[in-house]
Amino acid sequence: MNHPENLKYTKTDEWIRLEGDVAVIGVTDYAQDQLGDIVYIELPWDGGEQLDAGAKFGDIESVKATSELVSPVSGQVIEANAELKEHPELINDSPYEQGWMLKIKLNDPSEVDQLLSAEDYLRHLQGR
Image (cartoon, rainbow, N blue to C red):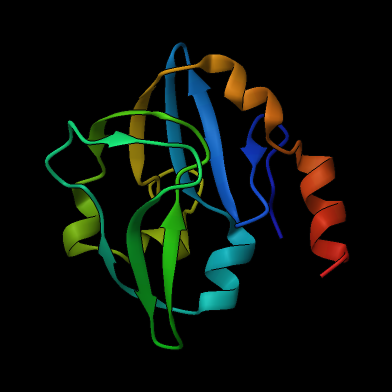
């Protein structure tokens, strides 16, 4: 499975990529593989919502299961990936690029330091 080195990860299988003071968030290749084919996603489509680290920000449904999405950091949603409304399968095809979910303006950039590196995330997965 693919887990890019330039990202940070959570134990709940979300990833984050920093773009200045904005965090781009999605689910990992591992998560989408475990879920199976993604058929629906619910996100804060309109933006503006304030999220706390560890708070639910949406749901993702596959042919196998439904799972909650958890924010790795605190901040204000500035954009949701509108393409996922009509094409949630982009998460299966490209979880780290086209399948991104949210962009959040960070409240506290130091929260990112608490997340896992790619190496730490792989060790976490091996311990499951």
